[in-house]
Image (cartoon, rainbow, N blue to C red; front, side):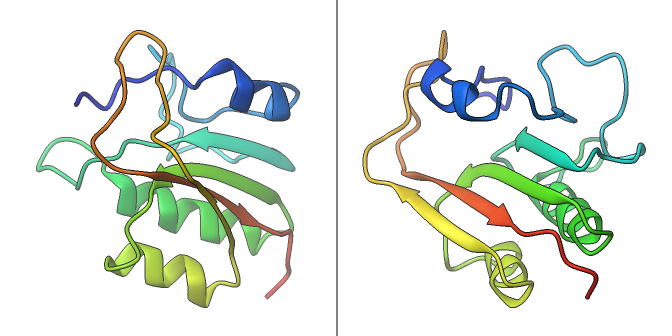
Length: 124
């Protein structure tokens, strides 16, 4: 599965007024700019590659931004066995598992479940 997958409409509707630092065909690098007070990102599901950021980079950025008092929502692969999932847990994230495979517009469904992760604004 490609990392370029359009967020399903039913999820997008919940966050339609939120900033998206990870859009399809971006004109900016969402990892290098400040995020807004309410940010939603459908982050790449893949691991970091030599020349391309992976899910761990987005998770670290999300945690940093939430510590600056911002409310962050992420759509991620449900994989509680990973270091990045543990980092989210330790940062106080709330996990909302989606109990069916997400159907991405144009790219079908991945062979695993996804989770919405909410990081509340905190000044920790």
